[in-house]
Image: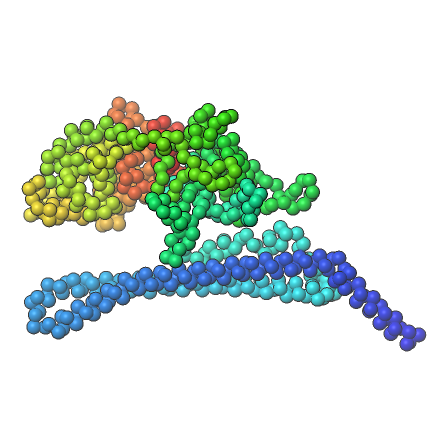
Length: 620
């Protein structure tokens, strides 16, 4: 019995070893496949993380070079100037004139170096955090590889058996466990670069577009899609040259231009979410796919890069559609295709889309050939645009230049609300658009809101603001039309750029306190639609983008959007006030704490119909 027992034990051990063979145990084989899949996903995360690190290091290097260029060049110049000063000591009378500038330069270089050191510390801290996050991903990927290897080698007894039992087997469960789609959020706190949103664009990003032709080599093409309030587009064409520019290989005016292909009009399209399961074969279908269906174009099958992007695109398209319908932009009969009508005859809900130096609009043929089609209006000779009838009133109300008094001025500054002569307009242009936005009333076409703004302000009211404190400034007087350009330039710079003739009160406080006080004044003036008070607040240092923390971070443009005519019969200047805010830097797409833009506030707050139309034109 003694010798038989070991043999029985050994034979039993052989049977257990045979039962745990991964080739014959379905559970082990299934767990092995799941573990291998998890290992592959972790390797993908690790590769994405390393790519993010390389991108971060490149941005850090570029920023370091850009910042160092400023102070190193200045330090080199500064060292040369000090050397010249020492060598030409006997010319101290001549050198004394640059001594104050040397001190200023030295202070500027000290500030630049301190700024560089501060930014470098911030970059190093960010890089350290990014490296730590990547190391966590690497550890998770290594652990997944160990688990996969252990299961594949048949280590399924003892703790290994529970490892097999607890191992997730579905793709969704594995993705959720490894947090594959949370990788951007994981690195959000460790990266400094954030892409600025494009003005007028709701959503833009990469999508995969399914080709319509069966003869194509690639069934899916990766395209950059752009969604605005009127339509959906994608960029097509172009090759990357040695200089880093993307060109189309064409010649002529369109050389180097990416084609902007129109997919559909938002007001006409419908979004259909594609189910992941194939109902006929009960198999997994395409993930994160949705279809754009429009009556005037072929359906577009698009695939997002993840569940978050998928939800963002579908919800954004539906939101744009709801906004268009809420504004009454219903599709007309001539926007739809009927039997026998070519696509070039169909009208678009917006006819003011013009080609720009960086992109062109074109319709795609139903066969997907990519042939550009232009509307019949493009074949007509260009008609001259009508001049704004307000131009004549503006010139009659302002017969003299606001700065030098020259007769018959025909140039305007939109954000300042003044009319100037051609000589003074050149000085205004040299100040930059952040100080003065110059237009010609004869060469440029002024929009209706711009004309109303100039009529509401004008030279007399604007000079009462900008020259209110001139009497307290000794040695200054307004130049005449016969004075030299240098005299006019000194006057205009002192008046608008340095704000030397604006009258302040002692109770206004320092510069920081002034900005807070006058930003509040601007907020209240915009609430009433008071253009003159708003212009005064902006001239004294108000920030048009200031958010009121007591009213859910609304800006002056938000409250201006829901302003109404007063009960005392005074004319309503809400459009002019909104135009003044936008001309001076207010953003139409700025959102408050409730994620409402100025247009949203105007719609839900029962704003004036003219204001709805105005803000709609600005956002589109």
